[in-house]
Length: 183
Image (tube, rainbow, N blue to C red; front, side, top):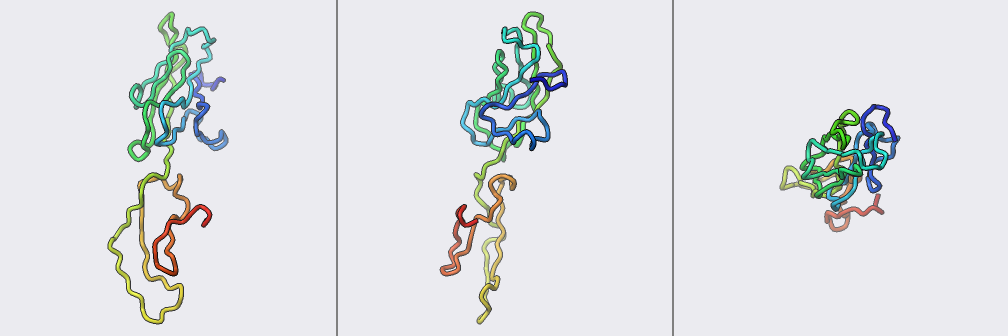
């Protein structure tokens, strides 16, 4: 597989949770769900000069290289070394290089890519302006709003937070979690 740029190609791993190709904005991105078990192959660097003779050495540098991510110097497979937390760090910018083992010279220009940490819904909502105090006028019609609460969390609103998660039970007034079947 050749990227046409003269630099090594970055390929998503077999277990990558990357969006389908038509949804990717940049083909030099890899995606890792936060809190994903480790180690896991998330992608592979592949040089056009690599003929499977182990004459190419793959090197990884940049944010998290060596302590968060590693590259197999023979196969170019990129692995996670620990669980990632998107709220701690949402993405990593790394560089990869394919070196000729005999000459110790680069086979192709260095390639830069981004590893995006995909969020999961793992943070509890924090209610703002507590405590909430409300009064209800006598004889108010059914459906009258008596209080409005605001809650936020550290999760990415695009992943796992698309639905209303809480419901005020009309009979007892209890605040309930909504299930997926509730819509």
